[in-house]
Image (cartoon, rainbow, N blue to C red; front, side, top):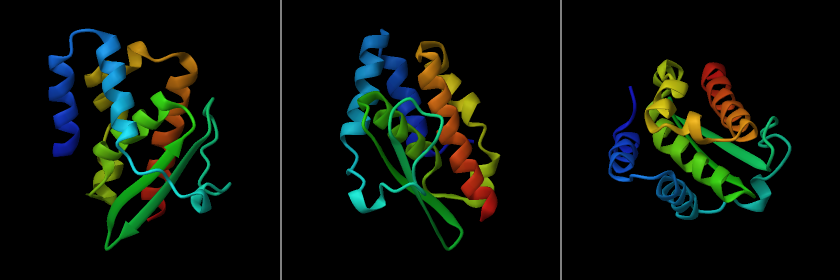
Length: 135
């Protein structure tokens, strides 16, 4: 149930043979994102449970979910970019229906992230799900 944008990442990953290239790809996705304005880097947007600093700023307009985000760690900023491609543009119900862990497994990320990064990714997914559930 992934977005077309996320499916592009899945396809790109299929062409990348080693994990160094895949990490570089994820980091490049993060570098391509606009930085989150400092005014939005506040306690309300900070995600607890991440080893690095992470902020997610959700926006719901006309029932459509999207979010912006930022991190002080390059790989985490890349993970935010990947999650944005997974969720942005979906309805709130569709966000709740996405099995993010299964989708990330398709990329093989679960097997190649440190325990701390995996916990941080889980915390970001939980924040997205909580915002969608709150409507």
